[in-house]
Image (cartoon, rainbow, N blue to C red; front, side):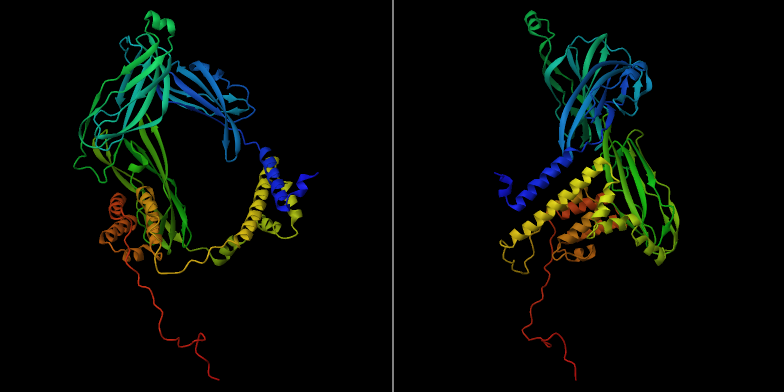
Amino acid sequence: MNVASNLPARSRFFARAMLLVMLALASLDAAAQVRAWLDRDRIAMGETVTLNIESTAATTSTEPDYAPLLTEFFVSGRTSRREFVMGTGGSTVRTLYAVALRPRRDGVITVPALNVGSLRTQPIPLTVAPSAAPSPTRTEDVFIESEADDPDPYVQQSVGWVVRLYSATPLISGQLDQDAPEGASLQRIGDDAQYQRDIGGRRYHVVERRFLLVPERSGVLTVPPARFEGRGAGGFFDDLLGGGRGGALEAQGTPRKLDVQAAPANAPQPWLPLQNLTLRYQSTPQELRVGSAATVTVEALADGATAAQMPELQLPPIDGVQVFAEPVQADERFVDGRPRVKLTRRFSLVPAREGNARMAGLQLRWWDVRGGEPQTTSLPPLSWTVMPGAPPAAANAQATPSPSVSGDIAATAPGASSAIAARFTDLGGANKAWVLAALLFAALWLFTLVWGLHRGDAGKAPPRPQGDTPPPPSGQVDLKRLIDRGDLGDVADALCAMAHPPARDLDEARERLADPAQREAVDELQRARWGGGSAVTAREALRRAFASGPQWRSVPTRTASPLPPLYPHGGPERES
């Protein structure tokens, strides 16, 4: 008896479609990739660094060729593990290799590219500092050291705090804790780095943990000592004979004190303490045309700050040119225990008239924590000659679809199955499977849509009575998030959308606000966007004024007239 014949036609179609989709996805093989990285990019002579290599090639069965490393490094501690990762695009087999490298000399050494099967890694630079003065002999099996990258930081300066756990015996388990000091915030960053170091003729395994310390007030800041409790790989006989090499291990560091300085009186506002700050243009247009958008991309690289501490990147106003800013792209990482952030923002310039256009260079004022003096980093000014807009013929030519696009449109018309088949013959095997899967998913989506509409006709909810009661003030949480992290233009759009009915622009939304403090905050927002005001000041004013959401004035509603309409048929009658 054929069970499939008893199933409804829709169920049989759905089962076959799902089977085809699963077979198509199973035939896909993601392109294999390989990448390599070091757990640290700067070490001292005599220390080791871990080279990590990750490969997604499912057929790779051999480990990387480590022979090129022997010229500049001593190689030891090779390990590997393989894991099966499920993702939205299917399953991936990922293999991670790790090897310990000890440099043969100091200076800048390049970790060479390595072959992993048919794949090849990229070379990586490594800075090796000369060995420091000989350390005194340590008798402890385990001890802790901690240090800050700046012993006398300023208020709200991002300080790199490093805790190192030294162990002369292998550790089986353990816990390393560092409490936050009073009057400062402490946040753990990144993963632990592990390496080896010789101290007084004894070999120690080092676990390095990094933190971000931000003092909140001036004065003496006492950082509590770090603590460790764990067990070493000694064994039963070591504990029985009192060798002290195994069993329970404990260690505690020493408290450290930092002299936190207040912000100087001549410091630029908003207060921005940094190690260094650079600005550059990633791209600038060669020419401007009336009515056409051109792109300017600005990049800021700050050493010693996170993205939340940086002021907003805004271009100076340009006479006769409208400037539209895209959201900021932030890339945060930590180098030598300090945060570094790269901010990238694109601006679209749309000229309104012909002539000369000049843009002053973007400027950011900050405080140099190393030199103890204010600094200003600026970009050079830019100037263009605005050309006339493109003629209508050129615009029509740009709007005309290309042959490839028109071919795609024609292929979707009825009776174009032969064109589709011809296009499939030009695709590779993996692309065929992707296109097939996409078509099947589209067919399933259409089937589900028709079935849902058919089922939904019987269960339609009764129409909602119309009234003048405004909807609840939704979106307040999003407004707070936008004020803290979003673009100022997004904040303005959110205020317009939260009005009931929605406001056409920010000026209309401001007039409909009932709270004077909220209207003043909107003025600060406008000055920060267009009048050269401070984005930090605007955000603070918006946070205070809109803490409980916007307060709107009541909008008068039109009431129906008790008199009958003058023209009940929709207009005056014509005279014959």
